[in-house]
Amino acid sequence: MKQPEDLQPVVLNQNAEVVLSKRYYRKGPDGEPLEDATGLFWRVASAIAAEEGKYPDSSCRADELAREFYDLMTSWKFLPNSPTLMNAGTDLGQLAACFVLPVGDSIEEIFDAVKHAAMIHKSGGGTGFSFSRLRPAASRVGSTGGVASGPLSFLRIFNTATEQIKQGGTRRGANMGILRVDHPDILEFIRAKEREGEFNNFNLSVALTEDFMKAVEKGEEYPLMAPHSGEAKGTLNAREVFEILVQKAWESGDPGIVFIDRINRDNPTPAQGEMESTNPCGEQPLLPYEACNLGSVNLAGLYLAGHGSTADSIDWAELKRIIRLSVRFLDNVIDASRYPLDRITETVHRNRKIGLGVMGWADLLFQLRIPYDSQDAVKLAGRVMEFIRAEGRAASKQLAKERGPFPAYAESVFGQRDLGPYRNATITTIAPTGTLSILAGCSSGVEPLFALSFARHVMDGERLVEVNPYFEQALKDEQCYSEKLMEAVTQKGSVQTMEHLPQHMRDVFVTAMDIEPVWHLKMQAAFQEYTDNAVSKTVNLPNSATIDDIRSIYWMAYERGCKGVTVYRDGCKQSQVLCTGDGE
Ligand code: UDP
Image 1 (cartoon, helix red, strand yellow):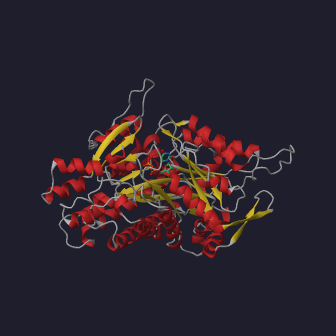
Image 2 (tube, helix red, strand yellow):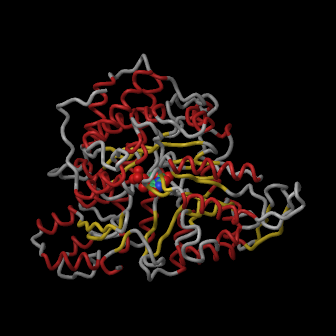
Image 3 (cartoon, helix red, strand yellow):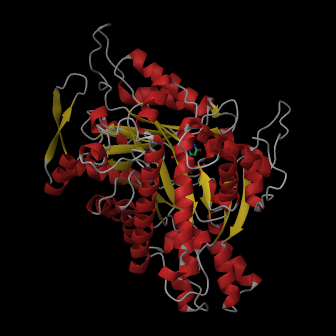
């Protein structure tokens, strides 16, 4: 589709300019950009809208839809995940951020997975693996009579391979490595990141089972099992294992935890097998050889000023319009994307999972003057996500009418319970939106702000300073603004100790470090309740957080119905992505 001459030019914030020109613009052989922001968003909008042509009963015209998609993205109301922005309408054409690959218990299968991961990383996707099927270290290898080296030694190979493949020259491959808690090598896995820098291309999570959690509760032993032979391999004390897990997470942030039985309870297509892993950041459980593309609605832009009640201060009609359009966009992405393996194309096309989520949540709360750590915020989270899920499902039903349900619909839980038909086996996921939130200039995902003013270290050591615009405006409105104050906030990140600021300001403008961990969990659980897949959430904690804090966070995640959780204690690693002034 030819780029129309009357497209509204894109207005970029300063950080977006840096990110787009470093990573996202298509470049020629000399490294010079071949497009600007208008060109990029038209490339994406037109490539995704062109998929309408495939569907004779489409209710949309591709050229009109391309303009709508363009306006949707360039008004920063919705953005698809980074690979879609980078690769739509290009020769590479791989548009999904999330993949899960199986790792089988043979040298051939292991190295197939290494190769397939390399192909995915090259195209900008992240990969998740379960290593639970690998025989434990020191078990016999039938064909050679030797002994196996175990999951950890193979994990190292995946890590090294990732190191060598910078994603399409843009971003480094991210991985999730999962091991079931009943695997005989579990203690070694839990301790894998003891030395800083080890396995640094991996997030590690232990897959906890319901049986294990019950054994922790009762202080009982639980059985280990060799996966390749089904042989019992002794027992461990569940509470002791849980304690080591908590201790290691306190030390380095890893491992996180996923509740694998819960993930499978919500598996929409159990006839196709179990889900054993998630994508790198944990928000997207998938079947082996499955991929998913994500997209996020920017809630920060939906605030309506001058309305009395909270409910009236959110533009629900606009949110509905955005959701309808975004679901169509994401469904088209499935067809527009070229996947690196036929197996992946088949699985993706069978289930047609998409993951629509949100960003800018903390910014919306700032504008509404609702503290993140309050019951009002938690209630609103549920209300917003319930709305998104309901409208997302309605949009998917509409698409099923035009295009047919996802091919595995009849065997899915929806087909079995006669709930559909839907076009997509899953519709909602809450992503971290690490880069998307920079482009849109909003707070990331459903996270509270890391700091009200902070330095971001991005690519090549570049440092971007950011002051939250809603905080700055509120200071001005309250006649509290001064250069001196701003300097102090950049140093501290937080205003909690600034007693000259009115209490209501300190209550509303809270950061991740100011919030009691329980509120992080309550918020995650509120969003999870109405999310088909999972919620990316890191419980960021001050350096002073204790092992008891981590234990209670992991336990609360279990009790509140989360699918997993990750913690990060400020300063526990020498290099970290986000720093407040004090941290440098
Ligand atoms: N991801 C990746 N490498 C990265 C960042 C992200 O592979 O450096 C993948 C990973 O699967 C992650 C998903 O993209 O879970 C979504 O991450 P995020 O929302 O931060 O990505 P964005 O679209 O904002 O770049």
